[in-house]
Image 1: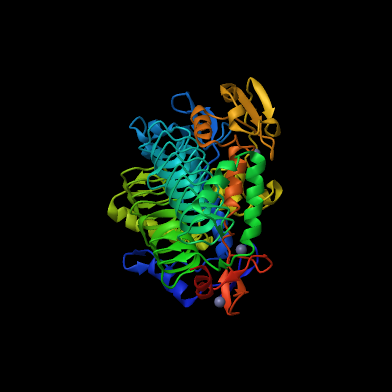
Image 2 (image 1 turned 90 degrees about the vertical axis):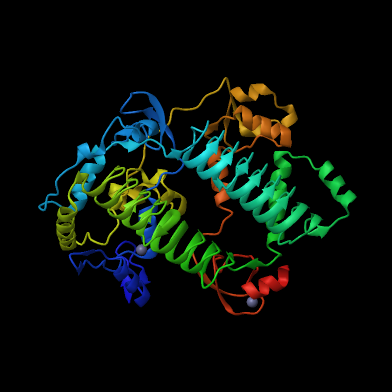
Amino acid sequence: MQRACQQCAGNFEVTDEDLKFYDKVSPVFGGKKYLIPPPTLCPSCRMQRRTAFRNERNLYKRKCDFSGQEILSVYPPDSPYKVYDQFIWNGDKWNSLEFGQKYDFNRPFFEQFQELLLKVPRISLENHSNENSSYCNDTDHLKNCYLCFNSGTSEDCYYSTTIGMNSKNCVDCFWSLTCELCYECTKVSNSYHSFWCYNGENLTDCYFCEDCQSCKNCFGCVGLRQKQYNVYNKQLKKEEYEDFIKNFSFTNTAIESEKKKLRELRLTVPCKNLIIQSSEDCVGDHIAYSKKCTECFDVIQSENGKYIWDAMVNNSYDCFNTGGDTNFCYECVATYYNANNVKFSAKCQQCSDVMYSDYCLNSDHLFGCVGLNHKKYCILNKEYSKEEYEEIVPKIIEHMQKTAAWGEFFPVGLSPFGYNDTMAMEYFPLAKADAEKQGFHWNDYVRPKLSGIENIPASKLPESIREIGNESLTWAIECEKDKKFYKIIPQELEFYRKQNLPIPHFCPDCRHYARKALINPRKLWERKCAKCGIAIQTTYAPNRPEIVYCEKCYLGAIY
Ligand SMILES: [Zn+2]
Ligand SMILES: [Zn+2]
Ligand SMILES: [Zn+2]
């Protein structure tokens, strides 16, 4: 069935299999199925709407509305929401059921839900079991980490996003798992002491390498497997390589020049149309150990998924940043840990049979709830008996059906964040006027300007780390790109000194976005394999200059 998107007017297809999925996850009350209708927005507009409900990395200093103390939060000080420090939020000093309200059948559901959203205190940041890692968000089991986001189980890591599985001493990494002493690595796993690498596995002492696996002592290489002592894809003798490295000086000018050389070499070595590893019947990019995942990006160990980003899920559609034994979820964002049958919800963890809820934990059978923990059979934060719940929810669904609200995720105006603070801005960038035209909020709060004993433009920084003394810790450095000021922290300076690396010329945000830009867009295009000419789907847009091969031709060329 072809449908026109109500947001962008683009056409999209709803297949018979999609309809079967909507039927399967439709709730049943008293033997009657309350069908979830096919979506009215195209997959991309649906993803944009969901991603606008997650602020991962924009943190603000503000007051805790419970204790009055200064805290760090994903909500700016002028946010209309009540914000509690994460430890108070998780404690027993308040009760989210106190805000319960009775459903009013004379008013739209989303209007009542928004009222509740504005009343129930929100958690300042979301970190679990961290140690000495307070400047982080959406993390767990971090030790001595600073400005890390969406990460888990790592130690002594700074300025990194989506790192985990025992990463140690890594700085400025993105999507890097089980890495140690890595710097500026993106999509790199199981690697040691490697800098400026992208899309690599099992790298040791590698610099400026892309699409390399099981390599050691390689510099400026693309598409290598099990190689040692290569420079610019040329085999050197051990002594020659050692001489080359000894004579290379890690200055900002040299680093930028190597990045440029790498981009040039990249254009001469074939790329694989899609990065899919050990998977069956999957279409998308960065998929591993999965089965039957369609239009999925960055999924691992998943089965029967469609329109899923950054996840580990089974039998689910339309999820963003979701995982950990999650089953039968639809239209969810940041729903984790044994989430089962959760729909149209944000940030629900260890929950089952939950609809239209926001940040609920360890609960089941919730409808339209906010901030509940260990609760069941609640509607708009009011507790009911099982029988009452099963009688009222179908009536609310029927009420929502009348206003075409049933089957839709929350309207974008209900997001507690400004569009410019959310993941939507990273994947679907919009100017303020356009975002507001589409109903999103915008965060206009301006952080107080950072200042140091000395303000230094990045271009005036000494070229080599050896020329930089401890006074650099008091500098406010002005980013070369967006002119924002940033500071360096002592453990970071120590890392640069030990690794003989210069102080970066860009602020942490600009560095994050530069790494993100290495990864292809989460979009599929039709192209022809540059070798055999068969039709392929790929994340390389047709006008891009890279040589793109189908999987078969790529494997023939690389191995
Ligand atoms: Zn659309
Ligand atoms: Zn910057
Ligand atoms: Zn081919």
